Image (cartoon, rainbow, N blue to C red; front, side, top):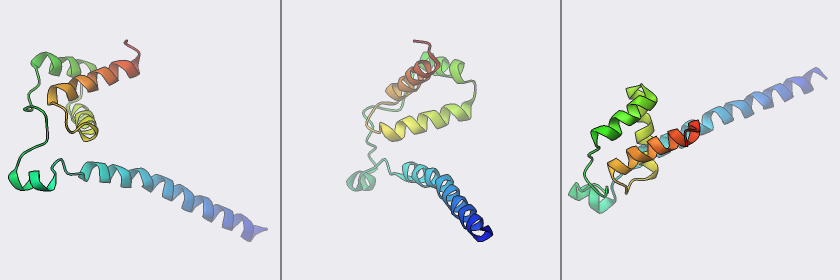
Length: 106
């Protein structure tokens, strides 16, 4: 009976360790994705639709919502990784929209 409990505990521990490691692996893959295709990497051309310029009003609006520069940078990078072809202005506005939606402002 004791060996059965030890085996169950061991299996549970292995399962929990695998569950904890899985999100880290997928997050690393997402963060290491290149924003360049092979031909664009050689030419140095980025795939964004427009230059990386964001209006001051949009920046201020996002910083009023978050109050933490590192958190803003993480949110922007996360959104940029899923929407690489969009302009920087669009990405910032998307982060603001998602925050307001999640917080129930709209």
